[in-house]
Amino acid sequence: MAYTKNIVTTVSYMIGIRKNIVENIAEENMELLNELSQNQACKVIRYLCKLRTSLMLNFKKTDIEMKSNLINIDKLKWFDHDNIAQLEEWGFKIIKANSSSSKYMETINKYISENIGNCRVLFPEWVNWDYIKDLFVIPRFTQEKAIKAEFAKYMSKIVYYPFQQYIHWEPYDCGGMLVNDAKFFSVVYKSHNDVYIYKSNYRQADDEIKEKIYEFINHTDRVEIVVDCENSNPYKLCSVLTSLKKEEIEKIQKVILFDDIHTNPAWEMVDTFIQLPVEHILVQRVKEQKSLVDIKMTATVCIEHYQNQVSSFLLFSSDSDYWGLISSLPNAHFLMMFEYSKVSDAIKKTLAQHEIYYCAIDDFGTGKIDDFKKFVLFRLMKKYLPDLLHYNGKEFVSNLYEEAKIPAEQNEKDNFYKKYIKTLKFIADDDGSLCLEIQK
Image (cartoon, rainbow, N blue to C red; front, top):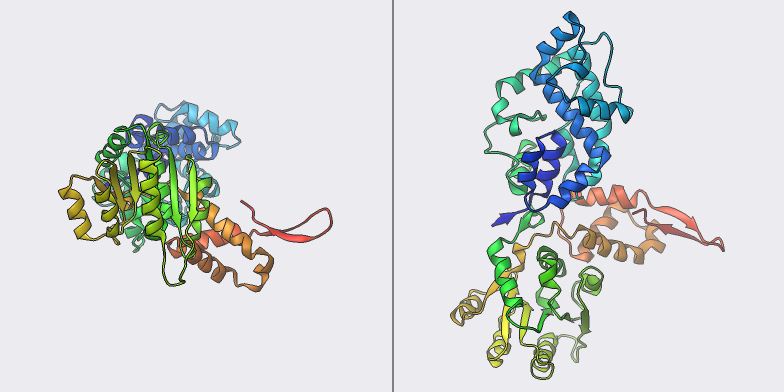
């Protein structure tokens, strides 16, 4: 199993780890690192954290140089002078006359505490921001006793701090908290006696799975994605398509969604997020209790194959009944994508015996589709805006996530409530009619 490194890349940059090491952590996600390096709020915290670590490592030496030799920190070789100059230019009064290491430490901690909130937008809402913030802010930093305790802990266990950069935590040999997002969540949540449940947010398919899909796409000229919306997940479909290379995805002719009135409402919005033509077929029922999605999908695939010369299909479903379709089209090529919790061992065994590749859409983490999830929540939310005053805000958010069928921790729901419900505003149109507006 592979895991993302988006969160650890951001944290590594912010706590001041050397850029070449951060680049190794970021690996293929250099775009994120470039965004961080252009974000002033992020750089402020990075420079302050680097300054704090350098001061801790050279606390007594700095004090002696300032008091005995009257040399300030902007002239001492163990500090990054360019970072100090940039902080000064941004309005942070770093350099102080007749100062001491203790006073500098208090000032740096004060600036970190006051500015760390500006970096909250760098993290998705499913991350517990309080746990991230706790890595940067030293509680009671104005009390000399608290700082001395942090200093003693840091110096005695420096080998357990990530690349020896100071963070606020109880250090132990965890094997490196910045290996990937999975390890980071495990360590940080454990330090707060908590466990992060929704691991799909930082999971990603390994290169072998992706290469198999690329090989399948490139095998023939005409490839389509067909989706059984009753037996698949719209968020995981988007996760798959955003995890693959753009140049490979663009070779797919279109996505055909076979939907039913009782499926996830997010299926209606998939076409706004994926960069492929989408044909959305809502299959009407003859009997209320009987869905005809599988019949309609089977018939359409046959038409696409025999009439439109489509030779390859990426089939998104966990339903074993589709083996009837696959086995009936011996000249067509299929790659089946299912969910672990819904697929049977029998269909996996049958596919393997006939050398038909399959994989799980669960392996493609949902961490990259936050914008799509919010889009769905906002679209559903707008239905209720006229009557929203009759709801309890927090209960409304819980109902919203349930209707959108988005699994989430209470922390994520609380963040959504604070960011989008508590900030709702009344606006008036030209005629004076009032309505509520979401502050995105």
